[in-house]
Each structure stands twice: as structure tokens, then as C-alpha cells.
Image (cartoon, rainbow, N blue to C red; front, side, top):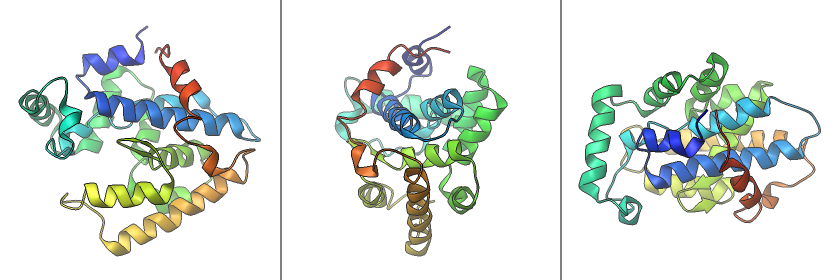
Length: 214
């Protein structure tokens, strides 16, 4: 068995991206512990821990210079280039391929595949709470920590404004409408409120994830 951080190291995942995936998993863990029904917690956690493994492909490495440390931008550019050579230019497909390489189940790969903004309407009207929580948790975490869904949307809008596949205003409006619907659905079954999830509240879950192995 390997610890999660060993797998991140094996795939040369940038520290800030590894931290993002850990935080998303921690948010998902806090939510799952608060629900009035049981779900497949292991699939939920693993999906969150590996949902963005290929995301260096879309990174603008100049956007957050400090996130290149302790290496430098040239180092991470080489890593990015190697990912593109191996997996292509679609970061979402790359994450799925890496998940297969790691040996994750077809169910988890399907969940990872669903964590795509284009699927938000389908997830909102569906009844799969693992997928709902995954996409919701992902949209509560910025490169600097846990924020509200609204704050994360504004941050992402700015960060990806020059990305070729960035949402237009109409698409962003539809996405947020459905994300907030999912938020309402989740917390209608929870003994906490959305604002109870923050950087402090997920600390104990991050500690648990330090020893999480597959």
C-alpha cells in the first residue's frame, strides 16, 4: 500500500495542487460525517484525492510564482511538458488516465469524470450524493484555502479569465445556480451549515488524510 503523498510524489504533483486535492477531500469528509444518511465514504474520499491529478496541464505557472517554490518555473514547465506529451492537452482526461494507472476502481474513475463543470446541471437533478459532494467540495477550495462557493467562483473567474475553455457569463450563472442548488440539497441532510466548513474545521480531517493509503 502507498500513502497518498507518496503517489503525489511519484507523479510529481505540484505542492499547491496536492494541497488542493487534500483540502477538497477534507471538505468532503467533514460533509460526509455530518449527513443523516450513509454513503460510500471511501469512494468519495479517493475521488476527491485524485480528481485533479492532471491539472498542471492547464496551469499558468506565472500566475502564482510562489507556488513554484522550492523548485523554479523551469522545473515545473518541464513537468507540465512531460504531462502534455504523455496525456495530451486535456487536463480532465489526463486525471482519468492517471486514476486508471494508479489502479482506482471504475466507479471512482466515473466519479472523477463527473467532477466537470459541464455536468453541473445533471448532478443537480440527479440523486448521487457522492458526485454532488465531490463537485461541491471542489468548488469550496481556492489555491489559498476554503472559502464560500460564491467567493470561490469569483476567484476562479479571475484566475481562468484567459483560459481557452473559461466559462462565459451565462455559463457561469447557470453553473452557480446549480452549485447553490446542490449546496442546499447537501445541507438539507446535514447537521451543520455551509459556513461551518472552513480552514479550521477541516484541520482534523487533513490530519487523518496524512496516513490515508491505497
